[in-house]
Length: 120
Image 1 (tube, helix red, strand yellow):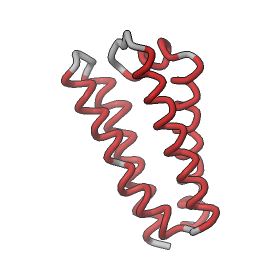
Image 2 (tube, rainbow, N blue to C red):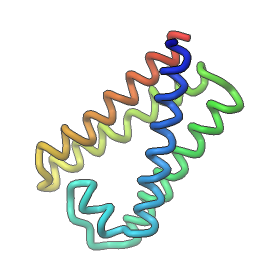
Image 3 (cartoon, rainbow, N blue to C red):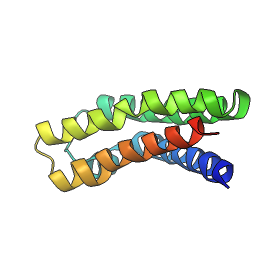
């Protein structure tokens, strides 16, 4: 059962970050609003879109080719991004609800995913 949950959560998280990356590439203003701070330079939104899309694809590739241990390490390291996003939102006038309810919660979920994958 833990295997199904660990792999399932990892796949969902990777697909979700691919979705976020694609959203930043396709509808950057709406994606920026959902991120929690207004953005006016579309180049930065495109960079974020490419970053997130890449993270999701690398995560799926690792899971498919190298398995749970590699994906666990990847998730552990990638958790830095949503922790950083939490600080960015707080430092740039975003709400605490978005900072903690979206970004910090995502970081914790990614760490839970890493722990489950390490447990396999």
